[in-house]
Length: 419
Length: 117
Image: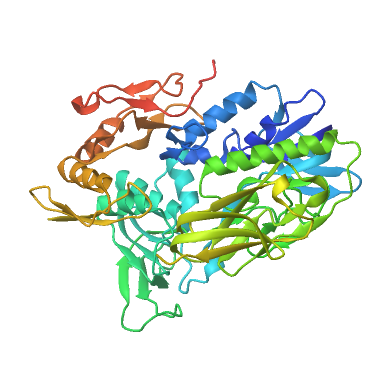
């Protein structure tokens, strides 16, 4: 099998990227490991999706259905129930894929888009002490069991981590008849949206224990109880603050990691912060012809941003296939100051500037008013005032082609403004 | 006296409202409206799933097509627990109409297709 572009993952990112490959001169294939398209959106049955893209509030499955519908009407090639196990780059890409019908087989491609989403951090990643009984799982897994498969994972629940998935699951389990005894968050503030704190916890009188973490787990076979403790400013448990909860289930909402490292044979340059590839403004990695987008590139707040970014990545891959005479690259890293945790894209290829580059970034701090500055040398080439900056909220700034004064590296600076 | 956090915008004002609908802690007029609505008759959009007899898709996701009184959430869920979907459904199809006399319908948020035997 030979294609110009192979897209790996048929969720929000993959579908948006694939829809840009509807081009008579380009052949494309989308590979999805689940039995249907839409990815994680299918299990996110709550609403709040689509305000940016459709200007209305949709549930996850509705958002997914709109894109699957366009995709299935596009006559683009796709494979369901098929897992990619490796990707090798020689002159072109060889994708090793597997399904129950064909076994292990090779697909050849000139360009690859990784839109494989992210995976959840597990108990092992955060070293919770105690016994190792059943009943401990990531919140997103429990969400799938409940909303797709129809299984309740427990009746007395505790949740560690106050990210939005944890909060959404606190409400969901409560509505389905479980008792959620509390949510513990090691930070002194929640990482979730205020709206979710109010409508998922406060609505059902579920306590939120800030600056708390789990310090013991009991249960030989099945989970029996957990103990939480308050932590000091260095996140060390404080003696005498123990609270014990008798529960049968512990859900973890402790972070997401881009799912790109399984492709061991592909050694692209990685960012230690986003835990995914370093990309230029075309979402191209250090391996020519390999693109990454969506949550496989960095974890987004809104699916709408995933769609917008991935559509752009899809377009760049198409352009890559069509350009017969590509100029050599002149890539410069984007520097950031200490108030910015990361920026995407991390590099600019000055030999192939588009009309506009959109930078997405996260701050390291909370501020009511701030100023974003893009500098080249000592000169400010773009600036923008922003309100209510927070690490949990992605910020963006665009720079157009004619705003660059030369081909020197740019620096992004986030300045907190006094009120 | 009731305390609440405003969710109209990202500021998140801590509001207080008393029985005469006097609101304090709000930085803008929208906060006052929010506090009164939340105090008098809080409304919520309900999203959940209902059972199906489909061999591969055991649940169908649904939502109320408008917010319903918060106090009705659990009784609506009870009613939905008796439903088993046995036929094709498209996004937007009514699964339960005029739920609890609210003139709000519960509608499907997913397509489900039963293969012909």
